[in-house]
Amino acid sequence: MRISRLYVAQPLIPNQAIELDEDNAHYVRTVLRLKTGDAVILFNGDGGEYTSVLAEVSRKHVRLSVQSCSARTVESPLQITLGLGISRGDRMDLSVQKAVELGVNSITPLLTERCVIQFTTEKKQQRRVHWQKIIQHAVEQSGRTVMPELTEVIAFQNWVDSQHKGLKVFLDPYADKNLTDLSPADEAVVLLTGPEGGFSEQERKLAVSAGFIPVRLGSRILRTETASIAALAAVQMLWGDFR
Image 1: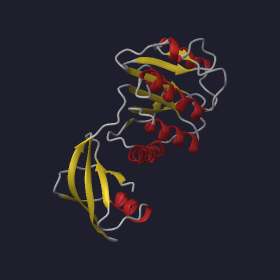
Image 2: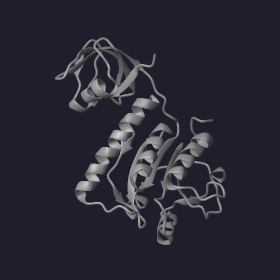
Image 3: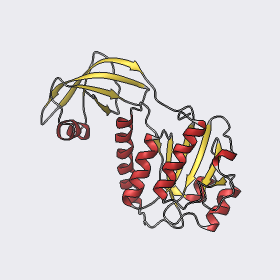
Image 4: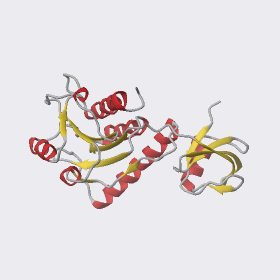
């Protein structure tokens, strides 16, 4: 029987008890429908998994007894930084979720010329909280013990001009090169993917001037969510833990 995994943003110490916050308590009670005595695997991003048992499940409290810790990692040796052009609704959610499952280490949502969503300061924060929850659940489901970083929403040019370590590539269906023509330094890749409609000509020029190499994924035009998933799978196959 599969044991549920749960991320908690607090210290975990064997032989001690913890109480879940309201969101996690609701998830345990209402979504997972777990009961007192059920086993749960907890993790907090320190690289370990903590076997735990539910000591109380009530309307007011959900408490767990932490039993033991074991070191476990399923992280790829390839460090992947993803600059993700913001797309609409479910497309962006899917891209974020699958990026986590495919082993990305850092995600930055990018405002591009063809972004169809207008962001106020309040909306930026709301979407960041929403995407963070998607990341958390994807980490829980995929067996990872390290939480990928989700940075603030920023403008395209500010991100491409930042200092990034590793092979810098961006997806361009009109490029001459493909990923097999390249090789990353220091086992690190910085991947830039566009929104619906792709990058503008000006954005392509800015990316190239910042050291990003345009690459294509086959001969077909891919939807934005397909392109990011395919590119992440490809770099893991070439240089990561899909080998």
